[in-house]
Length: 243
Image 1 (cartoon, rainbow, N blue to C red):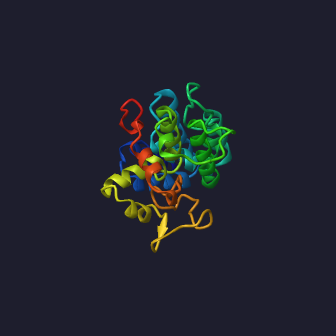
Image 2 (image 1 turned 45 degrees about the horizontal axis):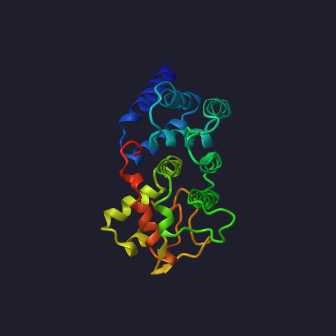
Image 3 (image 1 turned 90 degrees about the horizontal axis):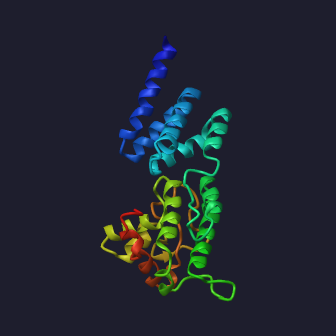
């Protein structure tokens, strides 16, 4: 009888996740359910499968949270089932995209944020047609306007989904807009400057989930703000079909 009551409580907790709009509350509840053992973990997996595969809903931050905790903390049986359902991750990478972003999805699933950041910069250069004949591996602001919206959106969504909605270009942009587009305040807010001094790459940056919101991916603000300003003003953020 006690087990039945516990299972009922777990089922109610899982069912209420959809109604928990506060991310901190969702994280706490998912942690509790994961720690409850196999029954709770299977209930979370069933919810994820129902949302992403059966109902084919757009992947949301809640899905990323559930996937993350199952991927890192579930028992082997549940983890194997997770892998069988989502062998490539949560994001369906369409063939219409310019590049193959599966390597980035793999890195972000593992929370290998430093390598994911490097790969993201490489993707941006490739999307801007900076090939082998070009000696530079960074963007001019004029390059940003040629970035395909759907690809830029996918890069951003991969970062958001696998970082609890903490990292991504759109997160940085949202913070920037909230502080009246003040660049100096942005660098402090996202942790790119400390005591007025830019952090040194890579050792002074934070490469884990505890970094400040908007901390990743990086952009070299030492060359000025034109490039990142162009990124924040890219048409992708005004496209209702993508965002």
